[in-house]
Image (cartoon, rainbow, N blue to C red):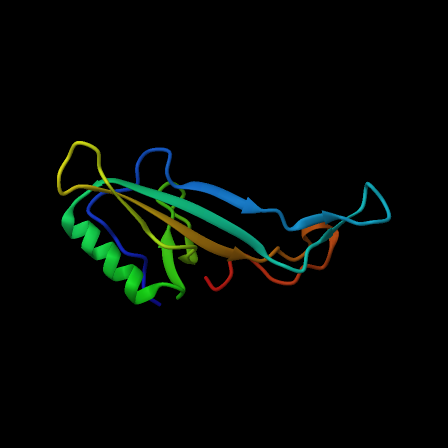
Length: 132
């Protein structure tokens, strides 16, 4: 499996921003009873690379064209945890204000996780991070 594209700069401070789609819902019969959704957790990471060079721009453009929709591995820069991810949408390229030949690159990655056995009081149906 191809690792996620490495650029010459790390994501900006405060990035990656993370969001998780809740996989627990209330059962219809009781306010105190919860059950696991049939769908897994979807975790999204938004990476922002500011003032990217032309080489970074071209590397990310090539990566997007070659690997859009395929699963890659990515290591979170703060937790050092490795995820199996794919691009959650097109990579966004914007001219960096006031500096020629520099771009701000925004990438949204999507990781799929399954609940651990015994989570939420049930028997579970998978363990840990999907595919890692």
